[in-house]
Amino acid sequence: WDSSIASSLASMRGSLGRRMPQDLGSIGYAGFESLFVPLAPRARAMNARGLPLEFYSSHNSSWHDPAQYFHNYTALGEAGLVNCSETRFYLPGVAKAYFDITRDAGGVEEVGGATVARCDG
Image 1: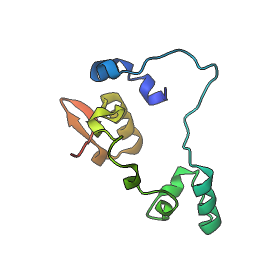
Image 2: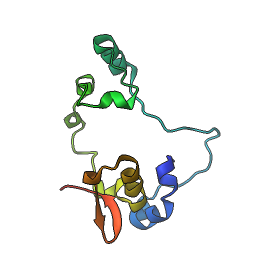
Image 3: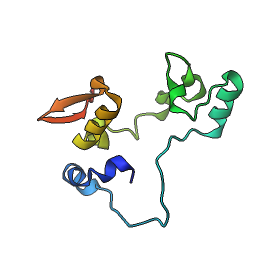
């Protein structure tokens, strides 16, 4: 579990029902959250532009063009996608934490007195 989900288990049970992930116990070691970018795009960006993609601040498209080192999102196709309102990002605790950290008011909205992700479509 990442840290944002661990605090939202109660609301997840209510909204996900039988799709609720089950806690099967410890995996035997402590883990940490981190950004993962595969070696190939990291190497291409570093060799071409000196752009360290392992640092999230390098993804600022106002300063850099990191998209050229990744596949386009359209390569995913629609078969495995779900609407944002069916993901953990729609859970009030997660959306509130997202807003508190990013201050991205365009990414959240108030629904029924709770802060949830803004899901278009």
